[in-house]
Length: 256
Image: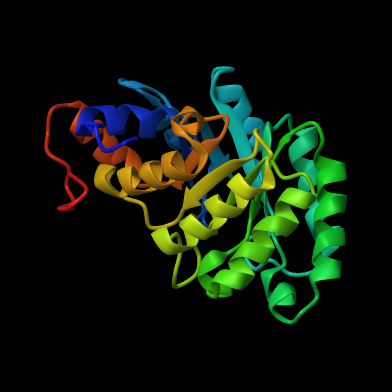
């Protein structure tokens, strides 16, 4: 599987699958301009940048066509507020974004409102077509495997292209345990095009290898490409570039 991946192999693959992200409350045009320059690494381009909807048009102007522009909707709180989510989606579509990362109303799901959550996702899917739709389930807040599995199934049933772990704004973000549950549900769905995005707290190449290995085990090695696998991160690129530049990863890990 992926145990034979060297640090260099892992770094190259992580770069190709990276959604380089800036979702700070105080982001400015200058911050997004810097992000877009970073996305065009000397070692290759990232898969996408992920920004607030108000920055989509700027990012699209600054980036080459091979780097996709993603933006968030219903972010980060995941309220059961369909009108707000649809307004975000319409803004992203109008600004020529390529991808929507929408937060599932995970609090509502925890209160047992699965039907309302399903309807919410179906409406977002309808409004976002033909853009790529990633559904953030906030796995750290859902916590229990059965809720993580249920959220993943709801996202896939609504037509999500990717199911994503986290906003990166809560105490617990991506974890290997949550990823394993989500990947298992994606595999069980039989949807050969459905993808997975690990987001939040992934800062090193050894961290990345853990998730790549899980994805390969559940979905097959052929799924390790940006059409089915993504990382959402702001700091991971630093470690990727260090490894590709011949340095040792900044994070000690047993992954190697």
